[in-house]
Image (cartoon, rainbow over the protein chains, first blue to last red):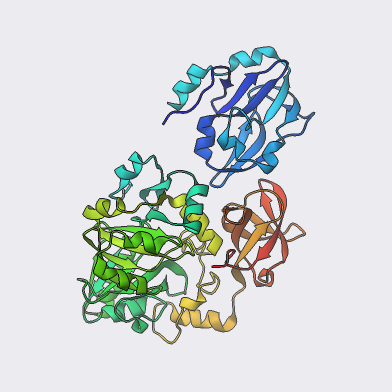
Length: 127
Length: 367
């Protein structure tokens, strides 16, 4: 089975992705992670204005069969959480890098992005 | 311990299943998604490989007596071709396992069959043999678990899917099969024991097939393959017990009255645990397996604490899930009997946070 790994994302080994947008970074979980979890039924996210810290948990994703902590790939201030996931948590399964995104964060430190896994490194990890 | 594998293991792997250890068996947990598989069973039909279930055959002049004395239900009430749900209890009336006992149709090699849960076949085989010897009964006991595979075809369309590969002259008999009845039928040319039983709340059949011919039978059914994930969500919606989870002689010792299966206990029969259960029946129980739903967002899971509204612990979740049919988080917990009536407000501690919950009548789903 092969999983989508977009070129423009970087990854944590706990399967979260981060993608540089114009002035912010978007965060979500990988295609591999959503497949492992199965049907996502509930996502608990921080609110706008909260801060997240690289490597620390920022929320929870619940699927029918499992519950999993979410870890922040970068540190910063939450400028948006994906409200669509409240009523449609299945977006995480259907479009993990698109409509199933979770947070948009204003970075504290640009250099943190460089410490994440590249798409190639992440591909090796889940292979 | 080396894992046991069902004869269809490679077939499931080719179909893209993911696997899990269940009672020492490496079984498919998911083929597509739990939601898809669950919906197929509720709305049309799904097929499960449940070869982790044990098969123990009992024959001979005292076969009926041996089963009568080791299970809670009344085996003498069964005519050939009939089955019943029963508990296996110890001297104290604690449930060791739940099982289905078959008085086999006359054309089978053995007289009786009972079906222990995953990984319990060895232990129950020993229990049967030891008691037979202790009581000096004339019966043969055979653990046939490795010789048979077991499939469960479940859902409102299960009957028509089953009939497709069945010989013409047996179709009427299968349609006439009532719940908890069984017959030998030729499915795709293979002689199988077909029983109208299941663990989903839907109409359906369990089919016991010689292990070396199960691939022929499995491949005949054109319907959604389902894994243990959907099997669990389907049974929780019905409030059906899972051995080792909703009761466990070591970790969660419960008697049938606490577990809500008192209907399987026939105190006018003689069996191990009867005297203890007679006392329990007379005195009543302090806790009962109770259904609840979460009002707040979250998913209750095994081991979570149930609290009263003051935050005092009153029980522990034994099974829980997001119900795919009801789209509501539901669970089972042993609670003091005063919480038994539906609509009582309680709380469930979900990852350190108290969530509102409410007791609910079982089953969660009308079927």
